Length: 326
Image (cartoon, rainbow, N blue to C red; front, side, top):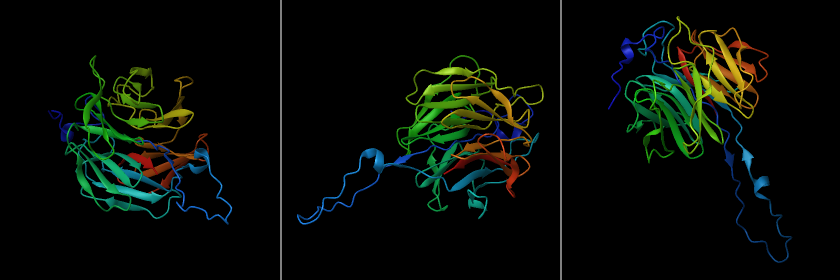
């Protein structure tokens, strides 16, 4: 059953509002291929590479974001409907890689495809990286007010804000499980979601970050119990943006206009790791930088140590929501 909550009647400044999700970058190991030729007797046999030598990590080249046009303290009614993209150096900006999305929220990228959540239609869409082969109804079963989205090497995960659950499906859209992780105690309202090679992480309205293994076991709804963002002024399902790398978990802190960071074991939280943002939403990391969406229409960037902050790394976005690099 679809959520009874209507996006057009919800404000970001109220407890029942829903912020915009994010996805994080997943580094995928790609197996190399041999030539398949058999060496002749007169030839020296080709050296045999070990699996470790054949594998190479994916190197990100582009950044993607959701344009939904929603501004701070305004109702959650999308006024922009596209997925934007740019080269990772901030050049070749295209604000309309994919268009005609009712309410784009979360964004994730993996392999040959970009994925997004459409809150208005209760759907997950998909397109090839050049913006072609658009399928607005790639997954429609089990999607209820889906906000954040993430991908691993096998699955698509999304935050079902409407059913208080994390959904999961195969990368081809099959084997949908709308309550892969469900929340039976209290109101959690999952928002952002991200994954690494071992865990799935999500944000809760209760000012926490949850964590579980990728198979859905060992669920800990209070992995990080105080993200430092809830207050009497910002009472939406925060934090909104969430990303993870080899050492840290990062989140967008709308209350403090900052980016937070914590060790992956949940220790040493820094709620203002990067300051000076503008009501930041989506969040993503690669091997060198952290990126975030500013509500004023820009994409910010800083090095992973929090230095070299550029709040206007990319301009011209329209209420950027979810963010992803690939």
